[in-house]
Length: 173
Image (cartoon, one colour):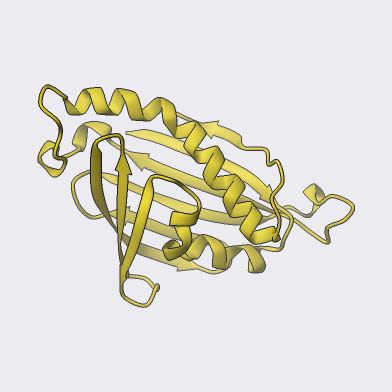
């Protein structure tokens, strides 16, 4: 299993941050590769989200289920089709990280644990002579840049204005 664990600081309380990480339907605003999010449920535990992704000549719809929610600290999810993957958004108070012009701060963690070799090759319509291993080798190096973009846009939404954010990489494959 591979693991990605990233974090950043938002200059808001966990109670103010958590609704943003919980709102999957807003995620297409944070990345160019997520085209649409459809939800089956009310956003609580058991809700299923179809995340329509597109990159290069590929498109794929990931189906994710919310497995646990503990506001304002944690939201856990699991992919339910095509690849063994699960993860968590976690929000922890970190008041010492607040700058002078902010009342408080929170650290936002994103964790994903996945087995890239568990992917169902039939789930993607790959161009002729393109293997799933080739796609994985091209996508994995782009994950960090994509994560940085998502975090910057998420923090801009939370704080109401864009700023440079520091992305802490705790673990990458």
